[in-house]
Image (cartoon, rainbow, N blue to C red; front, side):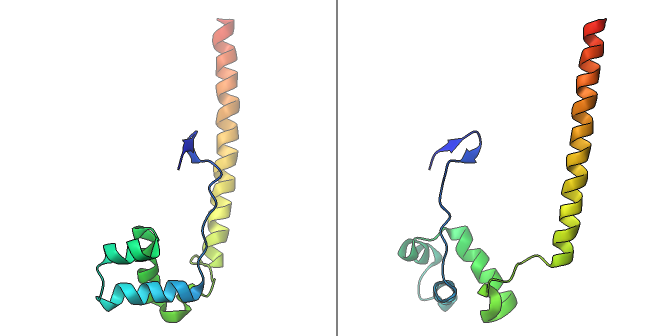
Length: 106
């Protein structure tokens, strides 16, 4: 995996079926295999497996039904916050340009 400019370059995100996730979690919870062994057997990132276990413990089998982890109201709040931050960023850019121009005139 190569990084360019701090971002992964054209990496395709892997998706897993609900059945695969449930089986992976059951392997983790069964204590038959150590977590490291489950990671190696399935080829899934360790942190991903632990996140699946956490989701499964919190929501049971419905954890992987494709429902968002963030509620709609929280998403709306975050969208408003992003818009506010974008506007503030634009204001700061304009202020920077203004003060840079003022420095040139001195």
